[in-house]
Length: 128
Image (tube, rainbow, N blue to C red; front, side, top):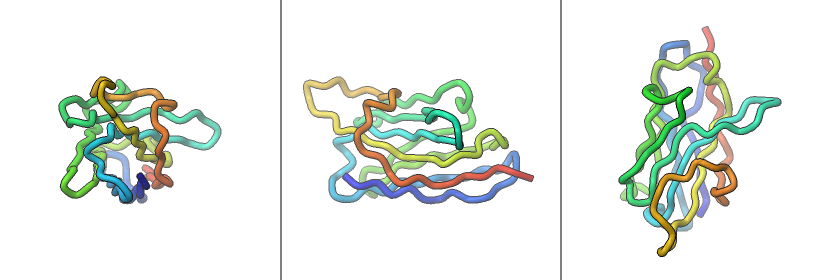
């Protein structure tokens, strides 16, 4: 599967932004998907994941309540809705995917190494 992230840009603190991740080459309905972000000199940081069946989502404390991941398998697209953005949210955001094949458990994946497929990243800058 190939992943193409889009929707990044320059926004002010407190603004909202929605990132999109379009999948091609395979149907996304067999994949668990997620988002990571990275700033220069820092390790990649997990910001959200959704299970293959869309039953479960999870966000870590730094973004919980402000970020929301969702998926539309009919459009082969995953979204990251971000609100109340802060300067510390500035980063390159990557969408990721991993195929879930039974008998694997259909759950959210939060570890970077669990995702073999990565998009190219989209830059989000939060600044006044």
